[in-house]
Length: 178
Image (cartoon, rainbow, N blue to C red):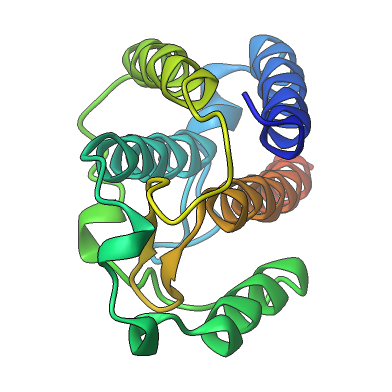
């Protein structure tokens, strides 16, 4: 695994472990709390994160290399916009409706799916040996095609964005209990 990829991936592993510890300390009521009808619960945020990482892995594993892209399809400005929006917690609609939580799975089922996709992703990333035009790409619905480094950075920033969302849900659930 490339060192830049390895560092980001190790950070994601640590953040995931921290989240799992946090989830273990929460009641079912808190995990399913919604601040309003159009707001997500913690379990719905988790479902969204799992859906995104499954899609991310599926796209990377198709081995669609960067060399096959039309150079005009690369949109660094759009990628930077996506990163800025997420780091500034600007609310936006999910750009791909397939990534919307459906609420059909339990937290345990989601966590099992997440663990499975993380194992597969780790194997795939360990096979990425050099930065080249044949490396796999991920296509963000708005940001466009991203190389492997940009892709992992997106997943990392996306994760952080939703961890702050979970923190806001926790504050809301505490306020509603008083």
